[in-house]
Image 1 (cartoon, one colour):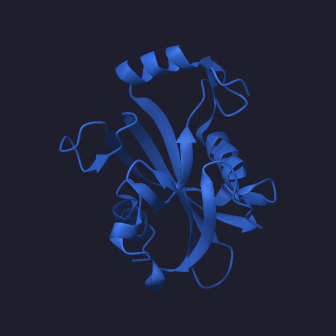
Image 2 (tube, one colour):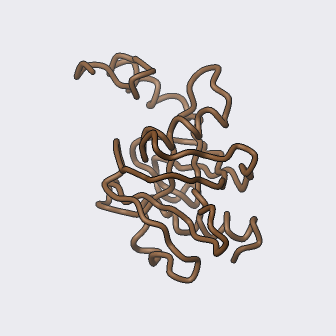
Length: 170
């Protein structure tokens, strides 16, 4: 990919245009909390760099024009954890919508890079995760062994709690 273009391989926007968009328009995003296919529930998180340093996060990113949400979730899962990982589409459960504001204090969540509106889902995933892209690491966590709030990026520990409550797993 050329350095002056922004994208995930399937989206090409010149950097100056992308920055103009980010400065003016909220970005539609999806986030996924991977659930293990095993009998005892576990959740998957990626460790990635955030503006505040490394943090555990959900899998996710922007939705492309004319892209169904389930396709966006699957695309981000594969881009982040490799083609050996799959999402069971029938298991997808909508959990919540989270807004990340560029300025702290407007809402509950903050991302200095962009104003994002993230439709957040949980879904069963299987396969062998191979962290790629923004993911430095991937780990499965038992529900009683989640990272502390301070170890999450973008305040997503609170999002994980909301998703687990919606699923009746808290």
